[in-house]
Amino acid sequence: MSVVDATLGAGYTVGDFLLIVAAGFVVLAIGMLYRAVKGPTMQDRVLAVNVLGTNTVVILAILGAALSEPTFLDIALVYALLNFLMAIAISKFTVERGGVL
Amino acid sequence: MTGTVSPAVAQVTAIEASLFVFVVLTALATAFARDVLAAVIVFGAYSLGMAALYTFYRAPDVAMTEAAISAGVTTVLLLLTLAKTTRIDHEAVFESVNYPAAGAAGLLFAGLAITMVDVPAVGSPDAPVWSNPDVTQWYLAETYAETGVENTVMAVLAAFRGFDTFGEAVVVFAAGIAALIVLRREVFA
Image 1 (cartoon, one colour):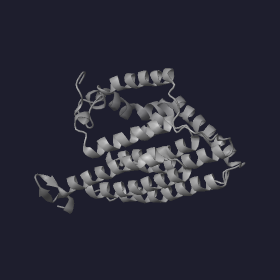
Image 2 (cartoon, chains in turn purple, orange; image 1 turned 30 degrees about the horizontal axis):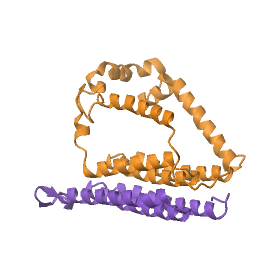
Image 3 (cartoon, one colour; image 1 turned 180 degrees about the vertical axis):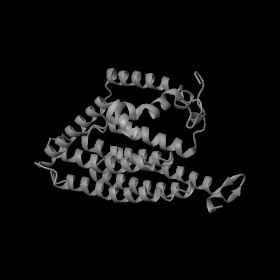
Image 4 (cartoon, chains in turn orange, yellow; image 1 turned 30 degrees about the vertical axis):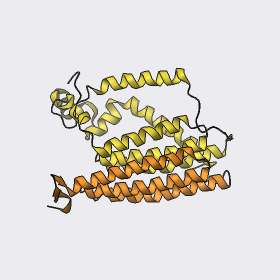
């Protein structure tokens, strides 16, 4: 029996609690989306999408813990790397047009 | 199952519901963004939500592909394409709604949504794949005699639906050429 199966009370396990925490992070992501959509400048959007990506890495890590699937951490790592790539590509694009990579 | 909501639809957890809201909002923002660069950026956020959703549904391989292709490669390719075209600066954040197009999309969505009611629940023994084993067993039994291919999955891909796979290969070829044009290269090296 792992930690995530331990009972917290009222029939909820640690895994259930972690899933609710992950849902809370998704609700935060919906809030961050406002900045990504509204802008007004591209720098705002790049930062917003970077924060969203970091948030997704956190969500994926929590999901991995809640569902007892350590392989989810690999996806979180891939996302952390790609998030960086995305931010660099969009930043370079806004500074010098044509220079994406 | 006709007319009843399948159990998979009934038990939507908090994380699924919040991810659905996030994905739908990002998809709508991508469709309605007036500025192309803003649409590309919000589309990156959309793929973040989709990857989290795939991960929650225990499909880490699909989530990994979504992360690598949608967030990474697609964003870079779209930006490269934008760099070779003109981007007009707009005052308005959102595009005005094209009602005929929105109506057509809504009708298509409604048509697809009607079919969702009849989709069997995950792992259901009533799913056609299990309730009609004659078809599956025929493929397992006759594949080698019919095609000479030992792997049944490979035989379905390359022999039974070979023209379909050929069409897919043409699409991949066209995508490769388009990527080369955008990257201004002669070969992939």
